[in-house]
Length: 181
Image (cartoon, rainbow, N blue to C red; front, side, top):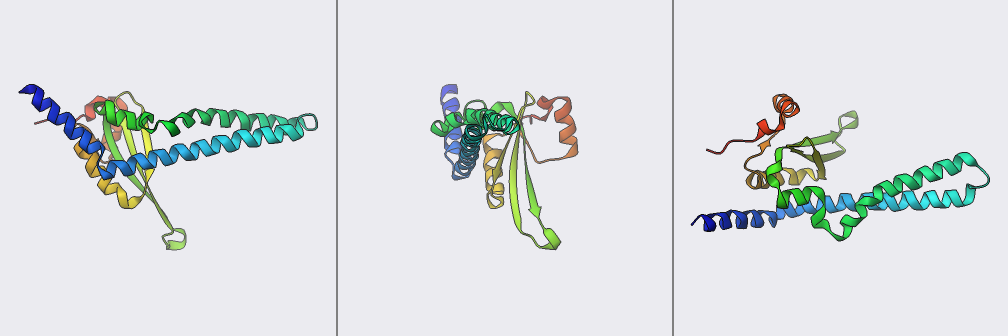
């Protein structure tokens, strides 16, 4: 009987991971990886091009070219996630070890020059029990749906931002784990 109950819980988790809201989250993660990969390729290629034309002529430009190439190389470590999106660290944590996530909150940023709303952007922050954190940029219209679905996937985690939770997280992240009744 215990085996069946455990199976239902894992099946429920699998169903939640296939939920459209979490697919939106996964798509946002993949988009961020693609942007980092594009920046890596641009940085490395522009560094090599500048280095090719300035190697013997201008030392300062050569140093900047090498710096671009090294920064592009540092970003290139994310390129492997393009072919294996299930290994993106946040998505992997949600799939395999969601109990390590202790706090989730969202932030909406509005850009309003002269009082006119131009752009809204949303971020979801995931805080882990080991002090590590992840953030994902998603559309503001999807924040509420994703947050509700995450609340079902992570019943042990605290949701919403407050100064009190921030202080608790700084002292001992495991204190943010909600107790089951």
